[in-house]
Image (cartoon, rainbow, N blue to C red; front, side):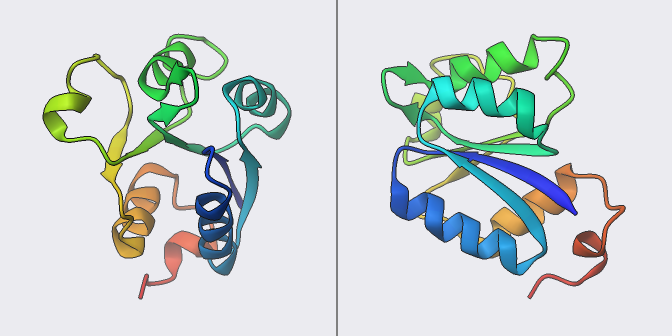
Length: 129
């Protein structure tokens, strides 16, 4: 089973994403702060990270860049979620593997996850409906 770490300050978003991903046999770890994210990456060892750009006092794009520039986490695909316009997103260079706008389209999110995560599990072998 694949493991995805979700980082968002909104408990409703965390619950919705956990429910969606659990339906597809994905193990989920949820965090609500950047500090918890850095800790969870070490012990949970996710196959992918989903993170909100507007992440408390830290910018998710900068957190993403930190993770992508660290040898231990550079290989982990990162999907950023946002309500920002593309012009606003581009103001800070970011090494995210994907950026998805809110409100979330579940099909697009699942397709992005499938594209970014190695398809060695039944999750990737099942068609997304």
